Length: 301
Length: 85
Image 1 (cartoon, rainbow over the protein chains, first blue to last red):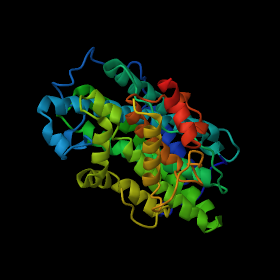
Image 2 (image 1 turned 90 degrees about the vertical axis):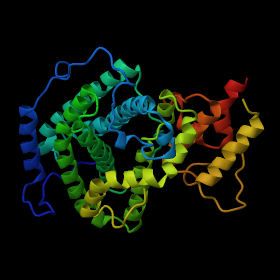
Image 3 (image 1 turned 120 degrees about the vertical axis):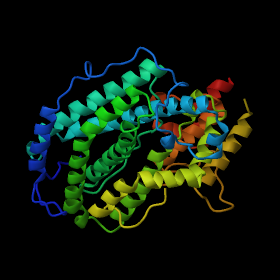
Image 4 (image 1 turned 90 degrees about the horizontal axis):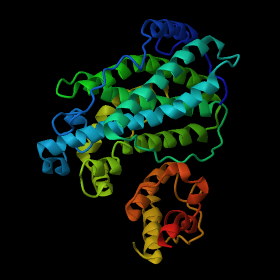
């Protein structure tokens, strides 16, 4: 990837530059610095059939016929495996984020924001430790991702734009779930706690990512041939749908005791109830993409 | 475990439906299936899950090279042949 564009005036009207924003976020990160190995009181065991682990309304098949067929303990058990899947896919989404951020450090152009990238990396690493601890301690595994990396050529700046689009998708969708769950007193305390901790760091990462995406778009997109933004928007729509599809993990359904996890996934992906949930949960993210100009029309999810 | 011909037919049908290929389009065993062929890299995730449903067990993606997704021959060889032997 090429270097980021750290300076400029925000299209929303604020005159704070990206480097000034990075300084402010760095001060906040220092103030809120935490130790992932000491901050969380992990219960020795959890009981997936006795407690909710994900808010029932966030469970991927909530409201569908498959959901209605489950009794209360089975719904709670599914909510546990849904949370394991959610933490796994967030962890898996943070891996390439960390890799990409490392590549941005200490270039001449990125000197003003490198200090904040150190915090960003530190916090993302701690999130991965925290999510892996939950998944391994209580489920005995982290769900694998199924993505296969294929090479692709980019216009100037397009790879950076793509990187921050991916970052915002994993962070904004994750944050929607975090905020719902950290406030939900029905779910297990450890589930609320992990969601709360993640949200507190992610709020800063999202502000930073939104700002950089806007600057990168304004800097590079005007110089691209017309087919590049068209292709990028097509890719974004597919990538967002694929990111949502990760929430309907056949292995997760099987682990929760549902027969034929692949069929459950196909039915849920096609369900208008589930689509309405995806659209509702994506609203803030899509607003960001529209406000920056990255998107210029509605997406069907 | 289904026969090789059955598995190839299911893979062929899945790829053509996923790619929204026009009626009558043929997919030979050596037709490239990735861009600029029929499927995008994002479709590969769905394809892996479909392959897992056919195999009845998960695929360890870390052990798979991108070349596995070249065509029907490489798909069958990578994900099914060793298990059928």
